Length: 307
Ligand SMILES: Nc1ncnc2c1ncn2[C@@H]1O[C@H](COP(=O)(O)OP(=O)(O)OP(=O)(O)O)[C@@H](O)[C@H]1O
Figure 1 (tube, rainbow, N blue to C red):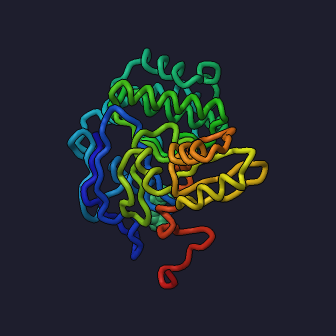
Figure 2: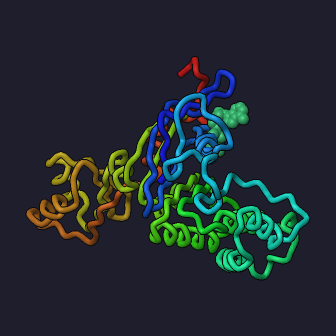
Figure 3: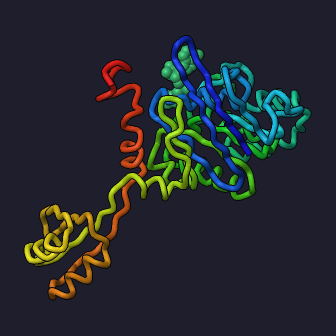
């Protein structure tokens, strides 16, 4: 379990994390989302005791990170892509880490295999690609067989096979009853990986809910309808309050009306349907909608004064 309580962190006059409270529970993958500069990495550093909050409290399994007697055995962390600048082999890098916490060589062999680095473990870790470096970072996070995992952008640098691998791994670790807290910019990936989301903007909490609820709350449901008689169908649906946009080739996108009602109206009017597909919005669309006012950088982001 991870608990943030009224966490606040300022850098000069910039408030990076602003009175942020949330709880991350075991047994499911919790995604941590927010636009660039929202405060995700800062929050993770506060949780891991790498930075001190100006106000509030960060606890892992009920205590501050610094109070954990053997931290690697309780919490495994991967912080944002920094290569391991070491002339040591990946294996020796992990072995040294393990030894600081009284973790045996057998576990080093296990994690090397678990992350698919067996063939590369004797190579110099400093020469690793970004993807291999990520795998090594994940191996280090798993060394102590921790019950809590805090992963900042673990998908960074991974190829499609690596992305599926980390998704499956995170879901398995959560299913084993661990707390898995993971930040990412890849919305499609988070939509299929995380069951629960914590979303922040400008250091403040925007949403703390299931992924499904998050999407449902902030995107409009659509129905895709295909018919050889779009004109008559459009008339019927619009007459009953639906909003209809023709996509050409006999397809309509219908909003403001659920799929069963579309089907019922078409049947009542004797209009043939070739397709009737309810479509839920994407996590990406929901994220853009909910964080629109919290975007720090990028198109449309003004200065504090102009907003
Ligand atoms: N050491 C620091 N000194 C000064 N400002 C900082 C420092 N660390 C973070 N900040 C500022 O705090 C804010 C939050 O940064 P943070 O890196 O936590 O955001 P983030 O959500 O992880 O962003 P990204 O998605 O781009 O990685 C940003 O405005 C950033 O510039």
